[in-house]
Length: 259
Image (cartoon, rainbow, N blue to C red; front, side, top):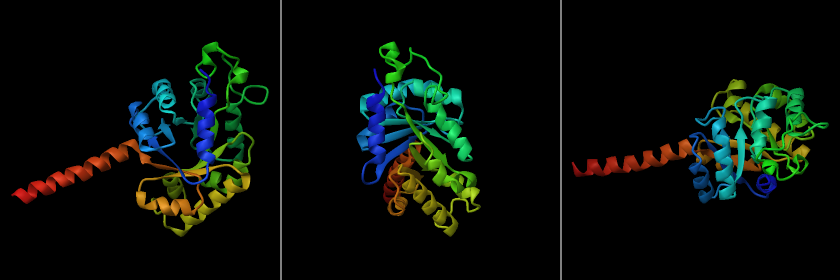
């Protein structure tokens, strides 16, 4: 096995024309990857920061994503060299780095994606990303480095962060950033709108894809208007709850109609 097809599939999706759709996986269920692919998502984010999955779920998620031919990004619990390297060894297409605070932090974190002498990634030949030793690690494709912008420090430096060699894309965490800006969950506040425009401009100037997340489908058009390249459409848990809530409400309404 070679991770190159998965990596190239993700890179192509994030940089394609139009708004590339994906979703977060918070339930830690590999079959949810297949469902997301069947729904038309082009990539998924296995969320190990806030979701119910763990590092133990990465291997099965890689297998499911490869079978479904969908890009798998793993959001690590926190940006650490050993964790990022281990996740990359499992053959994921990309890694999302939360809580990046500054330009220097982004430079350090991006170096974890490359082997020495250009980076700090540990080298092992018996990993899934190296085909279990079937080919040299030098033939392993570098996973997509996705830096999350969710603090005021990262927002101020977003243009410089996006221009760091090895940073492939940036992702704005709307909830965290709205709290950091002092306008929690107010995505129509002028300060948040200014921040979003600044974020997109920084990515565009550096020539890399920019993405974000919504929980309300009504915000898809406005997010597209900002000029985003990819958008996470909520999560598997949100989709399940909403679909069941709507159907339960229909059942309840029919029941009341009979009484």
